[in-house]
Image (cartoon, rainbow, N blue to C red; front, side):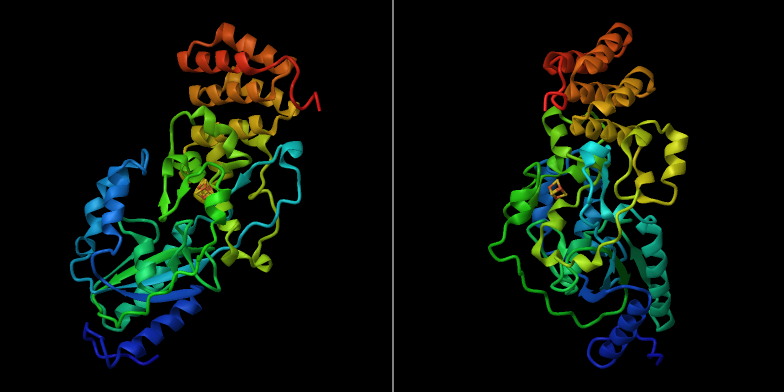
Length: 391
Ligand code: SF4
């Protein structure tokens, strides 16, 4: 590996050689994509400012708190002149090959089914940054969804792909199944060509999003997005949106799965318990068991109560009377009012005499007003015979 003179500006002569060194090291580390972006105000800064102002970020107030740094990259690392931007692939889930309603199975987004990417990808980025320092960069700072930066802006500026209508970075060969990472550096690299937008007139992601969270103009209303609702949002999921969760208990891959640029079935990982877990077991997890079960996974970053809340909703969405005993157990015994409230809702969705019985017993002993109101609403809409029983 040829060592370059320790100067910070590598524009012109030397830039290409160092880029090659970084690209080949990135490839060795498993990064499928690698690009170079000049540090500049983000091209869509005004769009992001308006998006935050208009409330599309929902309760993700940390996005607003980090706004200044997101919009002024010089504040991230004053010496930075370029951003090395990379894509680390992960495998999409296969078609489930099972009836989730019948088998009481939920779904976890593909990215979260393996080891926590934050640690895995950051460790590799740090190795790449070490190589850059060995070639004279005096300042590097690495990010993998770990700081106040607009990752997709850098990926776009670095030539990794275009921002699709599903708001993901899309690459003609790699689709969107990759994590983004960035290294800010005081090197000044020649910029990469910007990728053209290849979405064309396709609008599959907009049409098939179960909640209408995607709007034309690359606008994502996070408040409607299942990834936000199941991972970030900590309150009661709005009742009209609960059926829209379908089988998703953590994240949602629909707008990636339906994208034509992601149609590469050979890249799917085999179906397994991490992707399609058995819901009754998850509903019974207390905090310690939850941490044990998802140790080392991105799922452990969510709160146990919120995760189990999602499980209760999806059990309700199965409409399967076999879910009644576990939902009744959660309604009777779970320490979290959030979980009990969603267990009540789930019972209301399944309905039938057993579900109504559990709701009636809970109504007599429940002391939390919010849960009481869920029980009342569930009893109101739950007929004596379950929908599944009448099929
Ligand atoms: Fe819609 Fe799911 Fe995509 Fe969110 S992740 S925008 S809910 S399809």
